[in-house]
Amino acid sequence: MIKFSEITKRYPDGTLALHQVDLEINPGEFVFVVGPSGAGKTTLIKLLIREEQPTSGSVFFYGQEVNKLRAKELPFLRRQIGVVFQDFKLLATRNVFENVSLALEIFGKRSEDVREVVEKVIGMVGLSQKMNSFPYQLSGGEKQRVSIARALVHNPKVLVADEPTAEVDPGLTWGIIDILNKINLAGTTVIVATHDPDIVNTLKRRVIGLDTGHVVKDDRGGSYEF
Ligand code: ADP
Image (tube, rainbow, N blue to C red; front, side, top):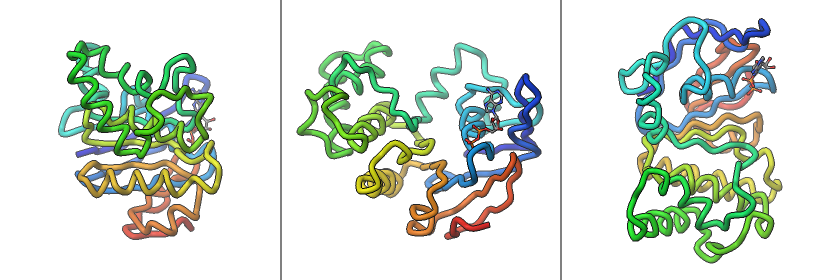
């Protein structure tokens, strides 16, 4: 489903972020990408959604070479890969419903269809009671739930979360992880970049370890340590 083949990424300033990375992720997997800050986790995600291009090597998504897609093909790729960011990226002047629906309206859907999908995904993350709240009225954990709902509106094949609990109170971390786990159990492939050993050691899923741009571990049912 997702394949990184001999991926090397060097940023224009010379920083080597990934070096000769080979990875395959299959449909339905739950994968943690772990490693210290600067290991290359975010770069890996950016290459998958074509926010960055590799210096050498290829990224494949369902057999299509992501780094060769034309600009007009990118929206199709990005609808299939929902992304959750550490800092939520919510619009401060829009309420929960609007933050989630905006992603759909851009694609010109009818308003009844938009409402149905938006209410469904907001329900999936347990925020039906907060549909009309604005971001400033929400906790970090709730904001992250909104961003998960937004990532789900196109019913993506993959959900990618980059440090989804970094800006969330420790007490609310498990609520977020629980939602990601349920989304995975419902059939969506989930990829979570984190440097939180507790989460990784508790869930016992596949763990890909990165360190200074190298894959140093790939363990099924693994733990954080490497
Ligand atoms: P992680 O997500 O594991 O913290 P990143 O993928 O963000 O790691 O970064 C990997 C390396 O690439 C780091 O050394 C980081 O400083 C560097 N880096 C990330 N983005 C850029 C950029 N746009 N330009 C130059 N260097 C970058």
